[in-house]
Length: 144
Image 1 (cartoon, rainbow, N blue to C red):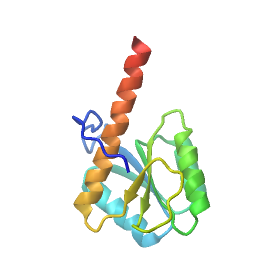
Image 2: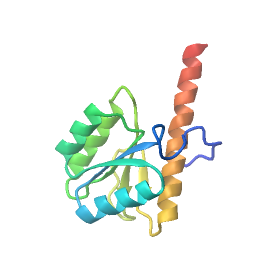
Image 3: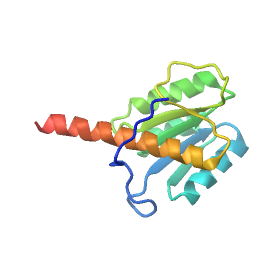
C-alpha cells in the first residue's frame, strides 16, 4: 500500500452534503455491515453492495470518492469491480481490503484489514488525501 503524508486537501467536511461518499462492496454480511457502521459513525456517507452486480450498478449510477472492496468469495468479481470503478469519469479512489497473507493481485491499492478501527480510518484518510492531491495536480496541469 502506498502511504503519503499530506496536508489533507482531500478531506471535505464529514457529514452534510459535502461529505466523503464511500461504496462498500462486500460479499460477507458481517463485514459489510460492520464497515458501513464504522464508516458512518466516523462521518462518511456510506452505501453498500452485497454483490458485483449491485456494486456495478451503484458505481455507474452514483459518484463515490472511494470504492472499498472486500469480496473475498469472488476474487475475479472484485478485480472486475475495481477495474470498472477506475474507468469511471469521476475517478474514485479504489482499494481492496486484504488480510495479511492473502494472495496479492494487480490492484493499485490494498488496505490491510486492520485489527483496530483507528488503523482502518487512518488508511482511508491517507488514501483519500492522496487521491485529492493527485486530482489537484491534474487540475493545475490542465490550467497551465
